[in-house]
Image: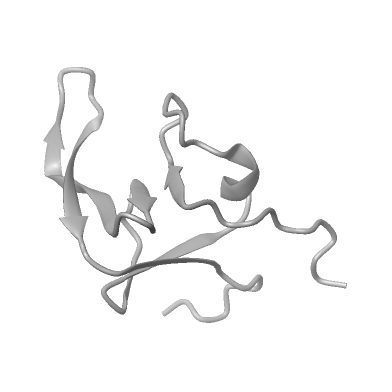
Amino acid sequence: MNDATPKPPMPDRLSTDPTSPHYVAAVLEHDVGIRFNDRERHDVAEYCISEGWVRVPSGKTVDRRGNPLLIKLKGKVEAFYRPAGGEGEG
């Protein structure tokens, strides 16, 4: 009953930037969670599971086009769909 539409499989590499070739709108329509080194991160802009890295904004620094400057962190990456409902916020 909860899942009216089936969720697409989680890609190995995903970006939140619409101009990126790794942007997948069908996946981003759902609430995606990223676990990096066994801690959930909410600021991930891009990830690659097979290569083991995430890109996150570097503070408030922006490039000349106003996009956040991203840094690459290496480690264990897990991507998952968060359950619907949002009762775990706190």
